Amino acid sequence: MGMPESARYTLQEVLRFPDDGKRYELVRGELLVSPAPAPRHQLVLGRLYRLLSDYLGALGRDGTLFTAPADITWDDQTLVQPDLLVVPPNEVTNDWSSYKTLLLAVEILSPASGRADRILKRRLYQEREVATYWIVDHEAGLVEVWHPEDIRPAVFSDALAWQLDSTVPPLVIELGTLFRGLPG
Image (cartoon, helix red, strand yellow):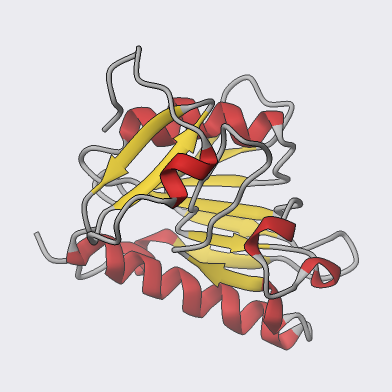
């Protein structure tokens, strides 16, 4: 998933890479290269998108949910593309570089993404104070939930709740339903 430890890149270098169907991300200068996701990954992504979209739409915030690719950068050594992200309405522009506050970032594990998602991106998201970070493990049927101050995740295997803010009711996702019927 990552390049040799000695290989370091900048945001400008990565943005000049050819469009070859791979997803290029950068965490503290370390290049992460991912092939196209498997159908199982995409099914989970679609289901989560629909659930979050319905929830945010009911709250009148339907323009704050995005899917990858979305070039999120905080500095010259960082370029990440969460599978799903929710941002505050006042940060919605037509320029990915203006998206600095993530209320929710979601990464759906793929066979080769465990180290990047669980260690590199998790540390980065905590450092950048991403309010809530979900690591969705569809193989194990669970979701790890991280917040900036956490030293270990909360792990959910039955139901997962997320609240945009304390003034609105939470979205509750039944994980059995989310993971039901996925291809082997």
